[in-house]
Image 1 (cartoon, rainbow, N blue to C red):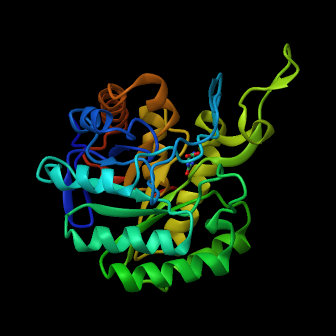
Image 2: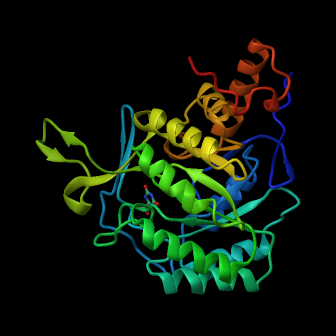
Length: 310
Ligand SMILES: O=C1NC(=O)NC(C(=O)O)N1
């Protein structure tokens, strides 16, 4: 059988699979379930300085082709996740801590705290939550993003990564890649977060389907796979010294294969994990191995990043 083994930041991993920040990772019991699953790494729900209830419900809706959500960063506050990180067994599998402070100061406070506890946990700075009313995504404000990365890189002084929103224009791919390439400590790039501020309409009810923001929310699932693959490949081409983590639209082993072909090293699962639970990682690993066997690949590095063009 094919070997799903891979490497992330020089660390060997059993497979390229992990959860997407925010899904099945807000509470310790959920994170424990991921730690006990076939996922090779896990990431926490994006945390803020203080605990948040998040947006009013209904704020998540599963759809025939994916999901829409406007959770609003409900989380237990950063100290909860630092405590979880302090007790995690890093020899078993890596733990990422996702941080989504609501201000530059909040981000720097959390990042400094994570630095000072000196844990092997990996930092994923979320630049792309589309669902906090009144808060623009740093990922779409290039000057603010550049300032945030400069401050975080200076404060953290260790390898970290960013979770980007989707971009839809080569000028934006170029500008963002140019910014990211200036930060040596910036070791990985996770593409993409949900496609922000979509609107799903229930025809029968003649209504939006989630309460926050008049029904506008982040789109995930099958709807976003082509956009996710494009962003993975765009930053894979433009940031040769960075490791790309793919996220968006992964529901089958074939989708994992496509993210790897596009240049991803790890592949995160969001909507499909929300719907299927942590058992999904065993299914995705099996389906990826079957597809690799069918194609005659023994290892991931035989095809990773080798997307052909016409
Ligand atoms: O970064 C985020 N992306 C999402 O799609 N939703 C969550 C949230 O709303 O908390 N955050």
